[in-house]
Length: 300
Image (cartoon, rainbow, N blue to C red; front, side):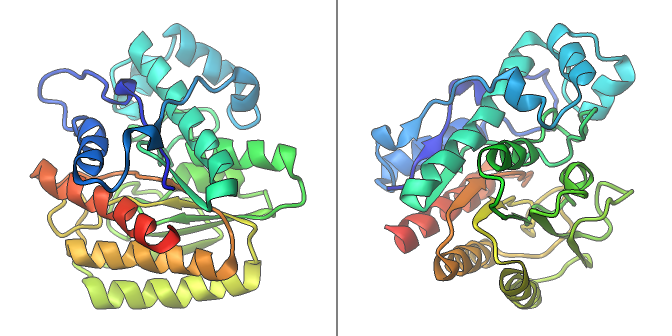
């Protein structure tokens, strides 16, 4: 059955006027339970990731200063979030949620973190609403346990996974595949194992054709044992920041394609839901719920 990491702490209380849509985090499990896609017992509450695991990826000085509120004003602006003890706890929970989902995916073939996808966080700095890089932390932790495995990160958020690419660029056991808007944040891109830069306004057919062609090649050449999938829904035409042109159905087809590749290869999939900034919160919630609905129909 589909399992979903979620905790009320994902819904951080932010200053009035802050543009990050925190309310989606509570609405997603509520909708899925209400409609019967998942039951209450499929939602689990992650603990706090240990510093020992974090330090496999992040610099000790950065972790210490983030914990204690010693980040500079410039670092706080770069992160996008005002610092608070609640923020620290949230980031520890989010990172743990992805690790826990990865463990659960070994038995269930797929598992979800209801937040995560914090792919702009670097080894020694936060950026773009990302403080710890949950995929990089999960990948490095997993490889510390299973050094002979190979991990494919499929990042389909509209923004390039620059932090993930930077952290893992010397790790041959991880392949980072990012399909993102050419003209979108971050303006200075890092080098993933494979970057596909998309022009503004690309629509369903062209997007899905590119995805299928490149994912097929990566799966064939890299032969992963695990997949980490960042299923951002800021690729939607309705997104305020995305600049792409996918419909909600196109986004659903994207998720189905990724999951079917994983099923064909018989590899577990760990999913973080990632970004979404549509004007209407229903567009964000429905697109995220579709990712879990598709998984439920294909895997169970």
